[in-house]
Amino acid sequence: MLNRRTALAALALGCSAFAMAAPAVAQTKWNLPAAYPADNPHTENLMLFVKDVDAATSGKLQITVHAGASLFKAPEIKRAVQTGQAQMGEFLLSIHENEDPIFGIDVVPFLATSFAESKKLYVASKPAIEKKLESQGVKLLFMVPWAPQGVYSKKDINTIDDMKGLKWRAYNVGTARLGDLLGMQSVTVQAAELPQALATGVVNSFMSSGGTGYDSKAWESLTHFYDVQAWIPKDATIVNKAAFDKLDKPTQDALLKASAAAEERGWKMWEEKAAWYIDQLKAKGMKVQPPSPELAAGFKKAGETLTADWLKKAGANGQAILDAYRKM
Ligand code: PCA
Image 1 (cartoon, rainbow, N blue to C red):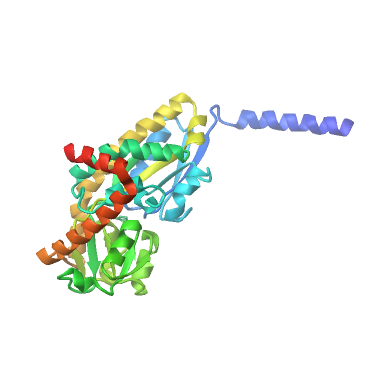
Image 2 (tube, rainbow, N blue to C red):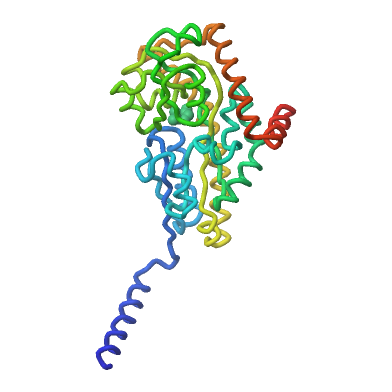
């Protein structure tokens, strides 16, 4: 009995010593898995975001960004946040189009191909995206675009038929479906594994932004970039709802304010850097060109099939969002 009491007393003493040593305000530490490299604008924006949150909460909420799919692979990040394995996460929303067609609205071909159109499409689709995410136990904090998507290859592509048989890297439902439609061999490879897939010849063509071509040093194995401007996909940054609800009100407000700032900054960063990336591809010796009229027409036709596919899945709700967007 005595031993136990002594032990408890020692424990209590230990606890109070600990309490005295601990900082006055309790710290909350969160993880934010992300899928893209540290020097990609998405990740740079996240680093600025966590700095803003740190400053606005006087260090009460500390968020660690894990870039380059180092904590979770790109397709696993969303689920990790839903299940609370990570409190926050950033990922390409259209990877999850199979869960709900609304997640693929920004990869409907040729629907929104400039940043201005992309912003409008975002405004038109945001309530539906938020609602779906909410039903999955997560809260949308902000979304940031990539740049218009073009085609990387190792040979001249003058018509859509020249794409037949290419080993095509897909990154979501739409790009895989495009591969099938155009008679290519599609393999889904996320950005973190793209440099290796290119180096080993697992793929010899893909669709992406100048940014991901730059990140994966496309010029080391490929030679051409066709600036098709098919669509502008977006990354979403989300927070686990229960984790958010546990924060006190001032911390929640600080997080939301930093999110709004990150969204605005992220759009600006990409608008400013899109042309720089294309210039880098040229500087590295890639042949950067617009698609020929024949190739563009081929993509438009494939795009119509993909749009019809999407509308069939998205139904009246999807159509209503497209209509609202077109009126903006
Ligand atoms: N880069 C990402 C998604 C879209 C983009 O421009 C990728 O290629 O995986």
